[in-house]
Length: 103
Image (cartoon, rainbow, N blue to C red; front, side):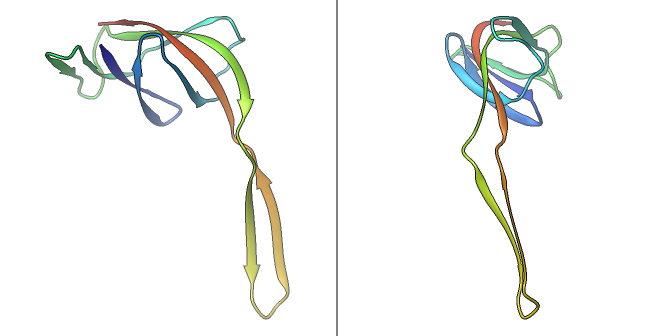
């Protein structure tokens, strides 16, 4: 059984027992969170698709921890005027373990 959920403006395919990294959530490590925006639930035989979300479906997950991704370098440059601007960015994420998919 798997589901497609939306969190942080992105969609993720989740299965029970799997871990995934999502955009940073305001939750302490070890606590349980509920993802309410379930777009699709499939069990191998049939799939239920919401328009846009399924009523009554939710995914329960446990927060494993928080972190930051590798730094990316952002460079702005204009020729002939000696303009150069270099900066970096590290996106924050939350690691979730999927506990249960409720339909």
